[in-house]
Image (cartoon, rainbow, N blue to C red; front, side, top):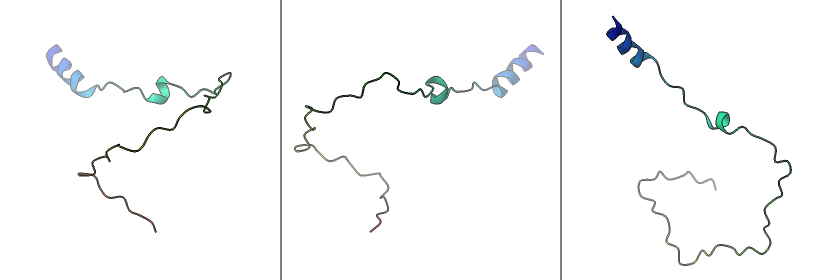
Length: 63
């Protein structure tokens, strides 16, 4: 009897997954200073290879 109960228990009970909202609740950013943006150089874009597009669905373009 305990064996069948154990089998039923493992197949019917599922472990609830924690959602990000439950793990990291949204809090107001009180007392936090914004990150400084002055003096930062933009990332270089020349010389970078484009991302591969094979296997991706084309996005509809609205013109």
